Image (cartoon, rainbow, N blue to C red; front, side):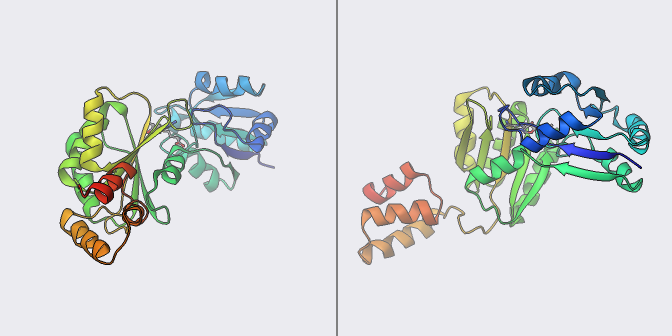
Length: 278
Ligand code: SAM
């Protein structure tokens, strides 16, 4: 009888983010197949997992390793696939192996856990009912520009992985193409310096530009076109505020309207509601 292929999620930063089932699985399988054995070692040591590595499955070595792993599974051995962080196959190696295992009628068992895309989405404040995952954004600036232009009519929240070295350039593209669209940069998720920077693309680009060098890992989220929480343009906002004031809505009420219904940052809503600025 064939063995089973477990696809096991590991933490994305905070080593405590591992499920009990992931630990049990990693302890009980015959071999662990890691993206980089040195990186996974840190997590395995923390949980006293002594299961041997079969080999590493780093990008480039993947296709060459698949046949050997499928043979191992066919011989009845259970194997757990892990990547350097989060969920394997999500912008990480593993897909050719899972596809080959499925084709060979080998049981594939996911052991779910953290993934940066989902952590970023649920903390972003952007619509989470429908979303698109773009994976890692293209390295070439021209390709990123094309992608951002295509997002002008994308109604769903877009989630993308971006390198800190290219983040500013991508934010500048967003500020030029979609200046008013709400975006979120989720940085260093689950780690000490976790932060969410939210606002219209032009403001977020300016915030990071003022900071200089960007450090740490980032997920970029872009609000869908026509999302109810899309920031209003100035004329729409003024029309709404005039009606609200004429109808006797309190300053506090206007502030709440701007933050809750329109997703506006608190300090900006305060300025508009109390000082009439905006
Ligand atoms: N398999 C991983 C997952 O499930 O999220 C993703 C691996 S991908 C090679 C690495 C990218 O994920 C990083 O460049 C960054 O965009 C994102 N990422 C991973 N960990 C992160 C974290 N702690 N905070 C923010 N982004 C993170």
